Length: 365
Ligand SMILES: Nc1ncnc2c1ncn2[C@@H]1O[C@H](COP(=O)(O)OP(=O)(O)OP(=O)(O)O)[C@@H](O)[C@H]1O
Ligand SMILES: [Mg+2]
Image 1 (cartoon, helix red, strand yellow):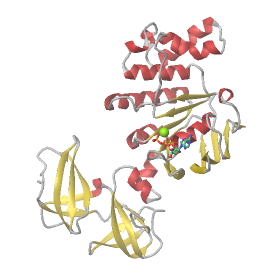
Image 2 (cartoon, rainbow, N blue to C red):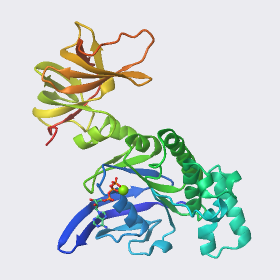
Image 3 (cartoon, rainbow, N blue to C red):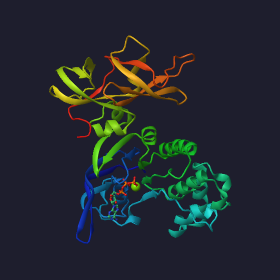
Image 4 (cartoon, protein in one colour):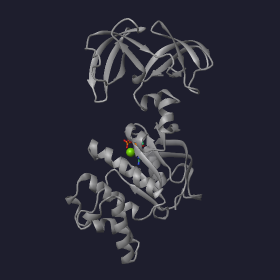
């Protein structure tokens, strides 16, 4: 039942009167059967537009879309066998949950015993078997979202598209529902495209993530690849937390770089493939968890603590460096750990062995 999806050179230009606006350009992506790929990117970068073209609600200006080997680029929505869950999943308020889920099957003139069986199956799948006679306003937000999912799954789509399906839910429910969505998606082995601008959601839910910026693909990779080996400053900044510091690359040899940071020498190993090709000005990406703070003595850079936040499993510090730039440092929680106070002078260091991401380009360019 599962199919793969192939997007080739997809582009969309909206034309209003004399004005043309290109929202999506040159997007190519292959999604394997049963894979879940998330589109992640800032507001307005084109995520929904790509999804709407795959669903058939929008006609591409260029490129092609193939589902299971069949070119669907110009096929009408109802002939694509694609399920779509929107951000606003409005259920029919005057219909019972059973009837809400049965709606698409009735429209397709499905036989009554078949409807009963498939609705029961779909509600079972989303863990809502007992509520079928209730009405939408008698369910919680999370339960309503599950009904919205059941309403799509009951039609046994070959491909499932979800556009920010959890954005109306509170933080705790989002966490729970994303685990549920992943469970159901893997259980059905259904190919899925999922849109979010929540990077944690993207990292935890996906086989692969496609980072989109201004209508173009920045990078496609597994969550781990994107975090450990971002190919651009945009991705480094967008995935996880990153301190991006201007650095002078003094010398390069193999995967080692001699770097000048605020006038102090550092020797870093850099992530293969991310490295710059020549000495000169650039940027170094330092993850907050790789920064070591010490009260005095051993660190190579001077810093002043600005803020301290306790976030459960670790302590987050904002510290300012000699040139005034503020960076984040995470210290894992341990009982009796030394605490630094705002205003306190500290020393800061990095392990020379922790691989870093290094770019020839400079931040802000
Ligand atoms: N029908 C349309 N006509 C003209 N411009 C449009 C149309 N639909 C979308 N756009 C523009 O295309 C760009 C991409 O929009 P899109 O909805 O795909 O962004 P998005 O990444 O889904 O953003 P968000 O995270 O806010 O949902 C935006 O600048 C938007 O204003
Ligand atoms: Mg959108």
